[in-house]
Amino acid sequence: MNPVKRGVILLAGGVGSRFGAEKPKQFVELLGRPILDYSLDVFSKESDVVCVVSHPDWIDELYTLPHWREDILIAHGGKTRQESVYSGLQTLAQVSPEVVAIHDGARPLVSPNLIRTGWEKLKEGKAAIPVLPVHQTVAYVHHARISHYIDRTNLVIIQTPQFFHFETIYKAHQKARENGITDTTDDSQLLQKEGISVDIFNGELWNIKITTPEDILLAQTYLQQGEII
Ligand SMILES: Nc1ccn([C@@H]2O[C@H](COP(=O)(O)OP(=O)(O)OP(=O)(O)O)[C@@H](O)[C@H]2O)c(=O)n1
Ligand SMILES: C[C@](O)(CO)[C@H](O)COP(=O)(O)O
Image (cartoon, rainbow, N blue to C red; front, side, top):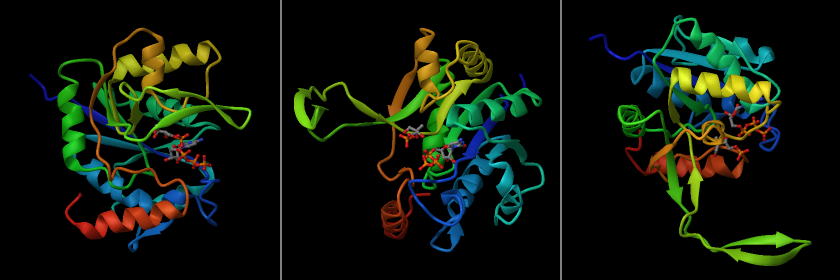
């Protein structure tokens, strides 16, 4: 039997408005390396084909990444994250992967272990995503006042990379577009809407998304603390 072909979509099509740097945050340096370069390095070793989705104005910057390789595919980003993922799926479809991992290029601390767990999970189901439990007290606010408190027992925080059978997530994206849905914040939602079960596995605390400048300090601390990746 042929080995399963594992594709990866690395999302770098955003502009980083909340981060507010001169360049999109994925190209900002974290301990001397662009943020995007960390996940590019790890995924290049843990998959068969990588597609980076880039904002069209920033493609030249990709070639300067220390771990850039000539065989990496490039897709143009869209207006929303969902549109960027779809563009990546269309590009990857040309090489027919059986499974795909979809990852925020703004999450530099993804570990080989997390990725291997995700691929393993796809032997059991069509979709698997890493999640963290909610440890805080959570409330719903209405008109600037607490409306009610939410039972956190069954709440989780969703991370990437998210793992899918390729045809399953590709079809779900096509269907969402047909239905005029173009701005979901993650990909697992599109399957859940279709009634396809999404498995979960333990995420990693340090697998943070760089959203604001303070997140850089946190990522630096995690990196300096030891052997995460
Ligand atoms: N049109 C978009 C929007 C987002 N992303 C990617 O999706 C990931 C998560 O998005 P987010 O953190 O929201 O990034 P930005 O959209 O860049 O940030 P902001 O919302 O602050 O502008 C990032 O790796 C980002 O590059 C993308 O590929 N295409
Ligand atoms: C998929 C995701 O990482 C879920 O946590 C997503 O990118 C989150 O984006 P957000 O809009 O900044 O929550």
